[in-house]
Picture 1 (cartoon, one colour):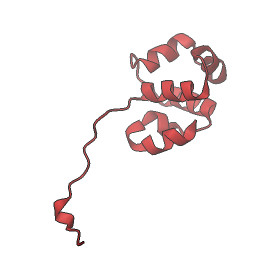
Picture 2 (tube, rainbow, N blue to C red):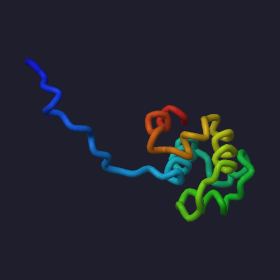
Picture 3 (spheres, one colour):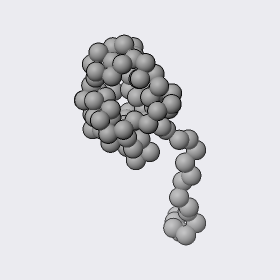
Picture 4 (cartoon, rainbow, N blue to C red):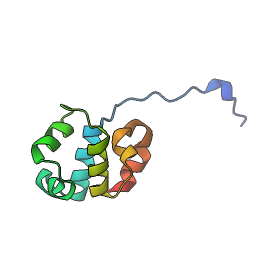
Length: 91
């Protein structure tokens, strides 16, 4: 069977993963409450809730604090569309 590359087209993204979704997913995979993540990263549970619900922008400093709590690189949180493969391996 001969494959013709011209017959293929790039895959279309069917979902969008936000920074808030990544934070919630990692937190839940760890079995942590927002209060537990708050204790580990120093960001209030109220602010974590707002981040998880995409009501505020993540920002570099908060991404660094949260990433440190999860022991991952901040880019996984700040740029989830580029790091989707790593998210599954981070928890």
